[in-house]
Image (cartoon, rainbow, N blue to C red; front, side):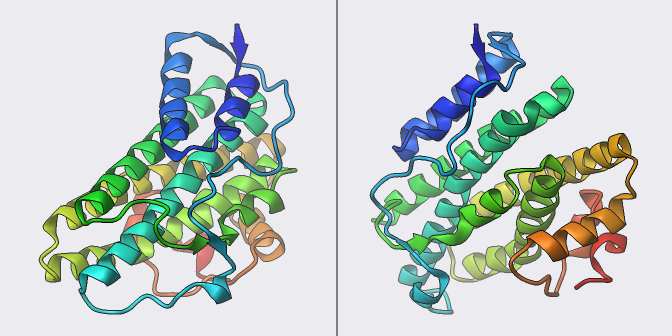
Length: 262
């Protein structure tokens, strides 16, 4: 029987975006069917395999996206979001393959569900790009999205603190305004995709917060103080308002976590 570690490694080492998203969804289905053993018994790569395109650039080298509702600007935004969702597939799979053995089966259930969601989000965004005459890989993309995984590869608690509870939570802050911008430009199709992603991301942040608190309880650590300490030590950036307090609260990430260090 294939183990969870072996299956996760296979997804991470799949470079083609569409093959990777199919592999992630197949992993989630295999786990639900009971075809995969709950063992994380193989080393995972430091970095996943990715395609030759898009070209990955440092944040300072990324072209500035035009404000407003031009089609060119909307394509650039959709492409950036598609890249985030593509990397998010690997982030969820790596979390499971690297740390899943430290948790009960419910953790794997949740995070393979997240991986399948991210694969679906990527497919929706790439399909929308193609409808607008573009595709994933047509524009450069941000090279720094995997840095948080590298910085937290040694500790599940740090990974949960940074990836879902900082990076994905930031998506909750900015997505509603992005939806409005697309809708004001008359792009209802894109707006509906982003609304679907937004609803799913609340659940993802909720899973991160819930399992972070579970692991804090296992280690007899106070969650909020521990999270604040980890963010200060492990996050290469700062928490900046405005925050979508209501969406964060729906995910269990209350102001007591982030207000004091924002």
